[in-house]
Each structure stands twice: as structure tokens, then as C-alpha cells.
Length: 84
Image 1 (cartoon, rainbow, N blue to C red):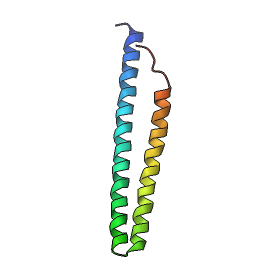
Image 2 (image 1 turned 90 degrees about the vertical axis):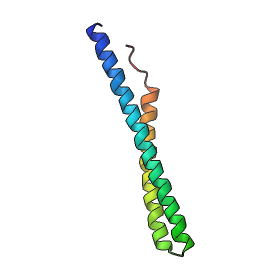
Image 3 (image 1 turned 135 degrees about the vertical axis):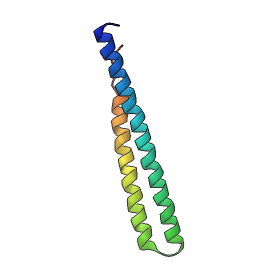
């Protein structure tokens, strides 16, 4: 392979790894948000609305983090990859 082709292949591999990590991170934040929403449900069911509110705020924070990662990932997908 030529030097330019090697750099392009390395760039593609690095970009792919960023996308993999992005998807993993998004999934983790969404799973954590779901867990906190479930906790909020349980707190509401027993009448502990203050704890439910805290769980809800935590869930919303993780959802916001996931959305930000998705926004950046969308930008990456919209940008064409350099050709190898």
C-alpha cells in the first residue's frame, strides 16, 4: 500500500472506533436513564415523591448526555469518509 492509502485506512479505522465508542456510550446513558426512571416509578408508588423527583432529574441528565452524543454522531455520519 502507498503511504497515502495507509493513512486513509488508519483514518477509517479510527473513525469507525469513534463510532463504536459513541454507540456504546449512548446505549449506556440510555440504559442508565431507564434505570432511574424505573426507580422514580417505585418511589412514586410508595409515596416518596422527593426521591422520585431526584431519580427523574438524574434520568433526564443521562438522556441529555445521550442526545448530545447522538448529535455529534449524526454530524460524523453526515460527513463523508475519506476514500481509502
